Length: 386
Image 1 (tube, rainbow, N blue to C red):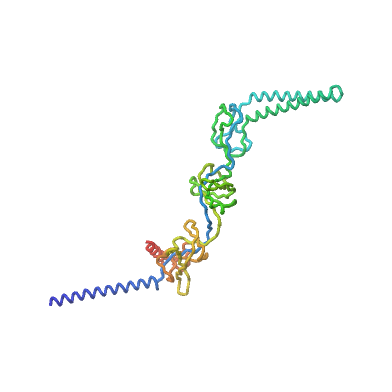
Image 2 (cartoon, rainbow, N blue to C red):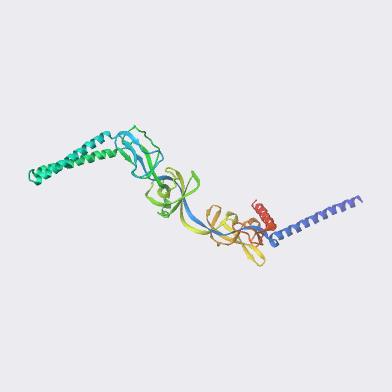
């Protein structure tokens, strides 16, 4: 009796285990059928938009002033007056520094007095010559003396002018390096004058890019001083020689700097943009990769609802979070951007959210039902990415 009871108990356990396995298989099949065959998977879609893309050549460059000069004196003398402050904007021809010119001023007064006396003497001699009292040779000598007097006045005026230092062009004066009363000599720096209304950006690129570079191409530059700013300009010149050591060529671009943010000497990153074009773009989350092939799921509306259709695409360049699609998609087509790992080719889907457009009424876009569907779609997307 004990043996029979034991056998009955064993058979009961095996029967219970078989029933549990069968029920588990049945429910798993129902879930699979609901997930892939009958029940639509909630997804978020992205309507394909056109964005601007370009082939980019990257380089490092140094900003330079449009015009730049070190202000110096032509003669040796002491500084009588300084007419500028460090960092001041000056106009072309404005007097910056005046050197002592007392001796030259006195000599100029004497030369001018001699010139006036010579002019009066010529007037008297001309009158005598016309009356035949004085010979013509005396008038010629007086005219020669007049020319010598004029030349002496001009020479002294030039020496006086050398003691007045003017701005050769409009720009901004740098730090002042001299003081009143200081003796300066030719070549001694007084200040730096820069015209920064236009920045000349010089950068080098490998010689292999010579075939794609030309004057007029657009460039975009950035600097660590203004990390959120992009400075745009265009190439104006390409050097006539390639450096035989680095095998690189120097390229110059000009950037409008009327706001004065950029300064000469700054290090800048440069991007030369070529083949600028408008192309369809999709986010990286919408892409599915199998080896070297890339696919997206395009959402198609039909009589029995929405379905995800797998389509191969050809990618181009990347701009931010978006990738260029060279072939396979047209602007306006909706693609699955979230929940892509829970979708297969031809599977029914339900649009829970439109990432770049308002969700249509009745597609889970409004009310408590829409919030519930969006929450489920986000949960499934997170699970798929894990």
